[in-house]
Image (cartoon, protein in one colour):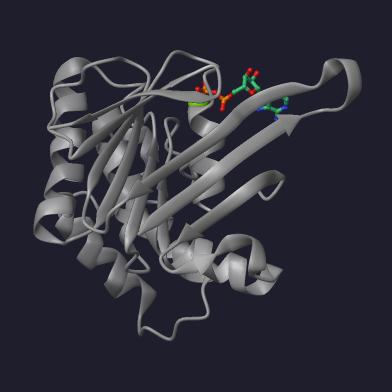
Length: 225
Ligand SMILES: Nc1ncnc2c1ncn2[C@@H]1O[C@H](COP(=O)(O)OP(=O)(O)O)[C@@H](O)[C@H]1O
Ligand SMILES: [Mg+2]
């Protein structure tokens, strides 16, 4: 599903250049539940951005879902981001003036898919994440955990094969974090999605097929469970 070979990423030039990734190679099978851990600044977000086609300023090769990302033109790459990948972020990225259903349905705007009524699809995915009764609520009327569920629902809208979640529990208390991780686990187990979760905290309470530990832009540990 994901095959990275010798990925390097340098931000900036000359004296201010910073190496965020220094030769990362890894393979992730379809259907895996993968955790990426490491301290702040170790390169986790950069790595996720490469996998998700959000960053193309790297060297090395990234093949995701059978596609060499560098070989894709802008149109195909944006289609890949919108239709193959679902992104979940720490800060939810919801629009305050829209209710849950419309926040989710916004995902329709970025796709060429002709998948019928976007609001009906939004309702479906909100049901899937357990928010069937909150469709008309705005972000300000939702708890942190509920907001993150809306964001997960939005990531599911275009039926992705891969979910990339960057510190999805970074703004949540421990109990709510457990519920969000549980939701991601169930998407992996029941809906056969490949899930890659970045967590700043070391051992979070969930099972993972594989754990990669990053340190200073390098993978320093791989654990299979
Ligand atoms: N846009 C950027 N410009 C310059 N340096 C960056 C940028 N993004 C990240 N970095 C640097 O790259 C390194 C890795 O960052 P990041 O991938 O965000 O790590 P993490 O997500 O593990 O905290 C850090 O040293 C960070 O300061
Ligand atoms: Mg980060």
